[in-house]
Length: 293
Image (cartoon, rainbow, N blue to C red; front, side, top):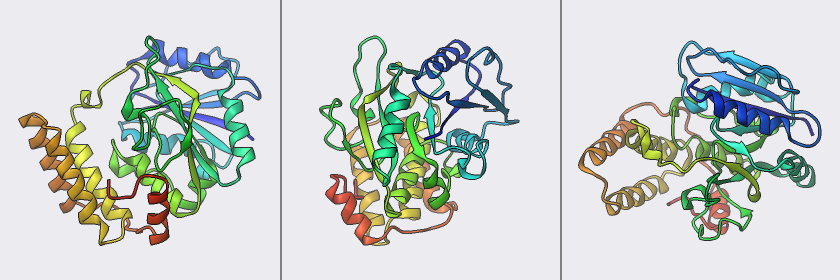
């Protein structure tokens, strides 16, 4: 089971990046080849590690899914030079030295397993935020389970998934690209596991720290539905999320940005539409998250 790793960076966290690479180098088993993608920056300070670390310097920031797609292709078409790819945030850190071996074991034991979502924990408190548990019943982050989506900066994907269903949606730029890939993978018959024993240490942060957060979240939520859901479920799914957004009582500027993104999601191209089969809707429902929420 050959593993590679993709890390995207803006070049503004060199010490964190080095610590992450150190944690990858400490992984047990065969060395993991790493590709670091610079989003509009030249990657530096990634030499001197025992494993191969290659760099790709992009002339501009392609966004999270676009940058990761470049990293995937650095391992051959669809990442085919390896069996699975780890995707790690550049300010994260693999807590244990056996995470790679656990990934190899998980994929080897279950040929239908397509994606593994790691647990994200704060390095100081050890707390896992509720939003980092990719299921509705998220009160116990220490419980591993089958899930319907995964965490973008702490996961492993079997490269056959990319071969079968395609890459991440680069046009999303930021937000919901993981769920888009997850739904396509589930529709193709793959499974997704959340593993509490595979841990990425990552400082607790609020997603709203990104200036584009509210607009991108709303726009991409509409794109996600338009691309992937059967037509009758599109208004239901988006109506539920509109209601939830209002119940959370965001600030005036945040709500204005959200509605602007929501409108943009309806009026701009979202990429190819490939609605999931109704049996996939039922599968998502049995896994605890029907695609209306």
